[in-house]
Image 1 (tube, one colour):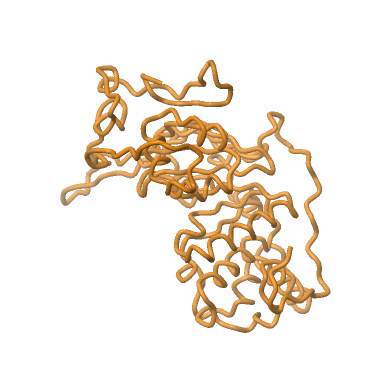
Image 2: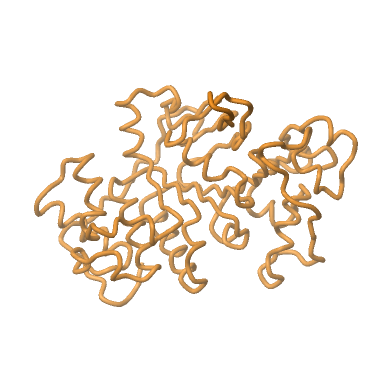
Amino acid sequence: MSFGGGVMTPPYKLVKNTNQNMANTNGYLLRVDDLKTYFPIKKGLMRRTVGHVKAVDGVNFEIRKGQTLGLVGESGCGKTTVARSIIRLVPATAGKIFFEQMEVLSADKAALRKLRRQVSLIFQDPYGSLNPRMTVGNSIGEPLKIHRGVTGSELTERIAALLSKVGLAPEHINRYPHEFSGGQRQRIGVARALALEPKLVICDEPVSALDVSIQSQILNLLNDLQQEFGLTYLFIAHDLAVVKFFCDIVAVMYMGKIVEHATAQQLYQNPLHPYTRALISAIPQTERSQGGRRTILRGEVPSALNPPTGCPFNSRCPWRQPNCLMQMPALEEKSDCAGHFVACWKC
């Protein structure tokens, strides 16, 4: 992996994760079963609960070791809430989450602390995710001190190794975030995410705040690190062109539900759900795997405070039929397309 420009090799070297065997018997590193995360709506002087915003409403997916699953959809569809529920930054309302043999939602404090050493996050905003009062070295080294008790020269060596891995010079260890560009700050965020040698990295729109020219550099960096260390990614995005380049499996979300789930190749070559078709048609023509006219969705995204009955997409769907207004279709595998799931009465 070559980044050029002052990259040095420190004496400490990261250890590759060569263990390809997973503890869970079904072969998945992460499994999410019927996850629901509702936020209460409170009104009046007594702050009584009068309803709920169903941010995540029955989400299911699995990620194998070494895979990248892309979770895509419009802003506000519940993607980030799924990620925060996985590591219990947001309390889930119902469902189950399995990380290897651990059931996350019922884990005690000790098990949760162990989980957070194995799952890390890369945040969307490279400017807001770093403490401006902490040096780069302190930001990257903090998880090593807290979770591993690493101090002194060993800590310095590890931080230098991490900086080198993401294409920054070890001399940057004593600088502050304001001295770096957006792309460099995101590299620092990647280094911090790698500090504890996690098994799963949740990337919450890690390139959406960056210039297009820098986006490809960060995506290539993440891809190289995945190949080198056997990382598994949950990649949250709204840009399907980025997801096509980076992800193995894609799950499309709309108003808290997954409406289509398939391999990246299946999804881009043969999108089934009308919402997925509209998203893919919005990709610039030169980046699309298929031609065809642009699909323009009519109407607005319904309010999460008062969602429609039946399929949540029915108010904007060009294929709407009576069933769509009455009942949400199940996410079912198509008989003629193994591994391709869609929640649509007409598909």
